Length: 127
View 1: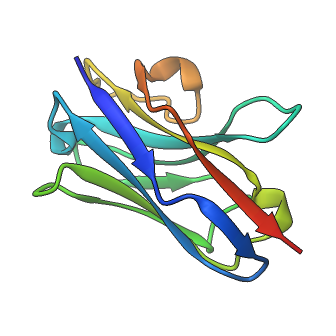
View 2: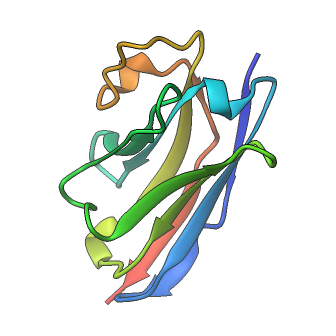
């Protein structure tokens, strides 16, 4: 079983930065496809970013591309989401997700691909 615990959310002014963390247990992240999603009030959960286990390829939603970076620290078994130049529309609950078993062919944009989810961390960006 895989457990994911997010942290690092909070209230930040527009233009600011946050780094979200996702600590994993029960599975090494270096051999697991990982992703971040977010859900704003009244909206569906949407893809933010993902990192592929096989070659560390990274993928981003257009809405965050150029402002966000996903990375992982294998020694700490933790995935990070660095977000810069935050906008009020980035306000949402951010969820870390893992695909286990992990497959090479990975539709990273689809939440259905992920089997394990964290509890979420709130990010609020004020204007």
